[in-house]
Amino acid sequence: MQSRFGFSCCPVHPSGYCYDYALCLSLLCLSFQLPSLLLLSVPDRRLSKPLAIAISCLSILVALILWQLLASQGILGKNFPGSLKTLEELSWWLSDPFFDNGPNDLGIGTNLLISLRRVLIGYSLAVLVAVPVGLLVGLSQVAESSVNPFVQLLKPVSPLAWLPIGLFIFRDSELTGIFVIFISSVWPTLINTAFGVSSINPDFLKVSRSLGASRFNTVFRVVLPAVMPNILAGMRISMGTAWLVIVAAEMLLGSGIGYFIWNEWNNLSLPNIFSAIIVIGFSGLLLDQVFGLLQKRFDYQA
Amino acid sequence: MVSMSSRASRPNPAPQAYPEAQIQVEGVGKVFAADPGLLGSLRRRRPSGYVALDNVDLRIEQNTFVSIIGPSGCGKSTLLNLIAGLDRVSSGQILVNGQRITGPGPDRGIIFQNYALMPWLTVLGNVEYAVQTACPSLSRGQVRERAREHLVTVGLERAMHRYPKQLSGGMKQRVAIARALSINPSILLMDEPFGALDALTRAYLQDEVLRIWEEHRITVVLITHSIEEALLLSDRIVLMSRGPAATIADVIDLPAVRPRQRQLIEQHPDFLAVKQRLEEHLLRETRAVEEHV
Image (cartoon, each protein chain N blue to C red):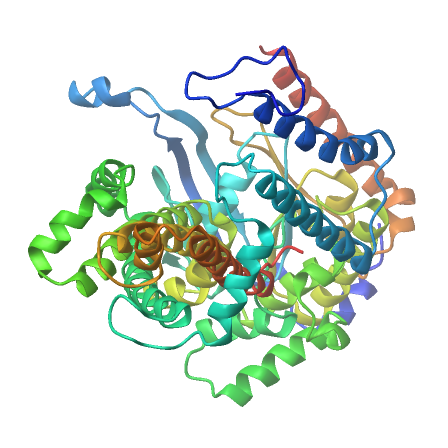
């Protein structure tokens, strides 16, 4: 295959793939970075909010244009969809998101709701377990010593490893999804809560003790509010994990937004996969922002 | 000597009228256990811990203002924590109002150096929490009324609905004072309450504490580093020796001049003599601490 851009120095892969596409791609990316590199050399000024938003929009626009250019040149592979094709598909999916033509032909919104439902149920159960257990672990050395080995052992296990166990126990994809979400999102909240309790300002506890507060009073009126920022930080990380895991898990479960991607892969419809990725990204962003607001509300320092 | 007429302004009888001390510290020692480590605990070996206090004897009469002063690290705060009941004595005993103490109680209000205000509660909420916890039988309205009353005492009625982070250090400590007084304690324990404040705010708060104390006349135990602070505020100054195994080196009664002004302690010969004595002691002890490596 002839080198399209005339970089004759570039080798050619035996399959015929010309590496100068890759070189060209890197150069393009680099040129895209140049303005921001220039900005680094100037003292950073605080951007006004509208300007910051405008720059973000511009950056997205540039990325979309680059994507379209690269795709239309065939650099990313034959028939790779450009941004225009993807946005067209996305707007089609969003124009009627909630249709239901049988299990393999659901609207993207319907699939998203299925996934959200699983995440919210599994996640809520996880928080309901993680916060009290975390408080207990932080307050009692006995609880810490007995729970710690499980946390340390199970936390690093990939959530997908639990899928077969869930399927065997529940014989139901819905419950299995919830179970996997539960087990993957329980750890960050638990660990953060326990850490928050153990790093609580000892003066608060001294004050409540000196007032003759009962243990119940101390836990609910001092410890719990004091660790609220840690709990929320843990819940935020847990929500992120849950949203990551559900997509992977659903590829094997047969419904939801993850399965949608798997299904479109079988249909070899990359624009639809990109549409799903964009929808997943925005949903994750929204969920994260909710916690951002909550954290701001419970930030006692600022 | 100053005339006794200034005594007449006291609402309560002079402290000497109470033969029985309100706080009796009898032969108290405090040893902080060292961590024996895993192997040590398996062998059941107990390493000798750090002896913070050794054989401390102290009597504090009702309605007196007592300052405890000593070189840093001498166990002043440890002693205060023991009196507060936040920590347990290793030997000896402490009696408050004739009763051996086993833990903290609302008869003793505590003020910490770093205010220890709960940042999720407003100023009013912080004081209300104290009242509610110490006196669970009060109704919500009564709790609020009492909290309000004490905030008025410290001059913070207009900052009632603010959060601690919106207050200056001096205001925060005034909230802490209001909180400590709101449970009507018979003893107020202050652990270097003005240590974190700048000099001007500190002077203002010292005057505030004097004023409030003149009104309430309860027993106060103040831990401090500052000789001037001790001279300005106290009836009696307790000097501690350096740690480890710190004990009480001396107890000095100050001339009973009340109300006290700053100029007075700078000019009055008795105060100057005490000041010199304190300086010598603290300098000697601090030098010994610093040169003992």
